[in-house]
Amino acid sequence: MARVSLVVDGTRYVDEVPARLLLVQYLREQLGKVGTVIGCDTGNCGACTVLYAGPDGAAQAVKSCSMLAVQADGGEVTTVEGLAASDGNLHPVQKAFHEQHALQCGFCTPGMIVAAVDLLREKPHPTEAEIRDGLSGNLCRCTGYENIVRAVQAAAAAMNGGAAAVPTQAAPSEPAPAPASEVGAA
Ligand code: FES
Ligand code: FES
Image (cartoon, rainbow, N blue to C red):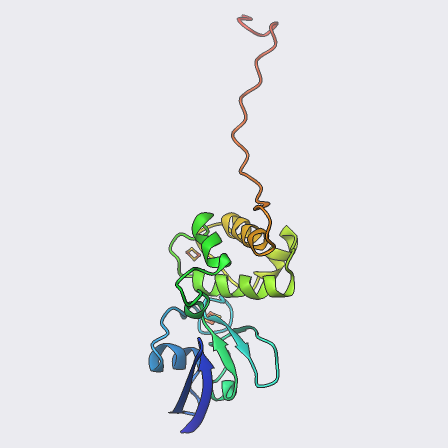
């Protein structure tokens, strides 16, 4: 067993944990932070993404299935459960995911939101290509990613204090009228 001391979602925890316990297992099984989910357990899907700041470093997104709890000792973890304000107001990224319908089954959503928060911290004005690249480590089986990209664009606009620069979905175009010469042509 090894001792870990870390801040998770604003609360300090000090625990004895097995040396091989994964950070995601510690968060879910020991702290009850089940908002962070396990998809692949192999570092591929991104569902377990949390923000981690080491004792001397800035917070960045990490896959908590690829990190031991003891490696997080002395640092600070923010899960999807710690993003909302203390008065309950959702983080702009959470709000945008809700408003832009950026989820279906929701399994990828906690990791996707945390990864998007990290992306917007690094790039407050991301292009669509930068959003797609920034979220490339997070897999979604349901949405086709379109609404996720729109949600990140909306969140970026909201966080920059402007109106949401979200492209609206193109309405289906009316078929062009047939040339007169073809109308009723036998
Ligand atoms: Fe961690 Fe899939 S559960 S990357
Ligand atoms: Fe189902 Fe993304 S909403 S996996």
